[in-house]
Length: 242
Image 1 (spheres, rainbow, N blue to C red):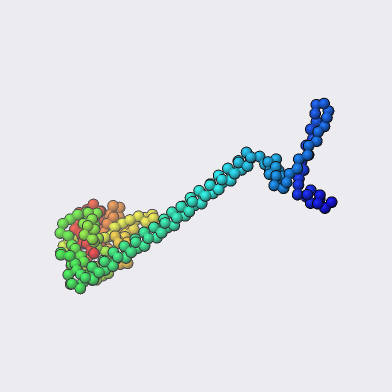
Image 2 (cartoon, rainbow, N blue to C red):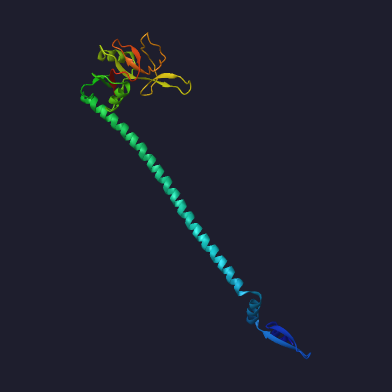
């Protein structure tokens, strides 16, 4: 009895019932072992076409994810390289400015130690060199002359400097680096130096107002060392400083 029970546990049974046209009924019994029954069950429950579609979907999803990861890696590498290049460019710019500044200081120190640091026809006073023209130009052309030689029109910062410049300007009126510009805050014209420094001291002629006249938009130095106002188009001498 026990032997028949173990045998029944190792087999699976399939019953088939067929009805003939003449009314006879036929019953078929088919027995499977474990492996055959499992294969038969898969064939009955799984659609091969459906399995194929699911496999294709999984493959496409995996491939898309793979491409996405590659693209994300490339973009990250590009961004990191761009940031590094920007940092290097900024450092190079800063170093270039520092090097230029150091070269200027070295050249100035070299000229001072050699005792001949002002160009020919330029006069030395303090830490600056001065040039007084013998021809006449407009304020704009005079300034361009100075800038072409690494200088600019004269900026007066002290009484001592004004007295020295007056000795260069005897018997002739000369342009200096003073001009009128409209203030964005006050919406009126104000006097400014070409180097952007404020007017800490003034030497105006008593006949002229400290406010710019109409079209009198540039400052000049008279022969007696006083400031006057002129139209920039007026042709007079000029004084450069560097």
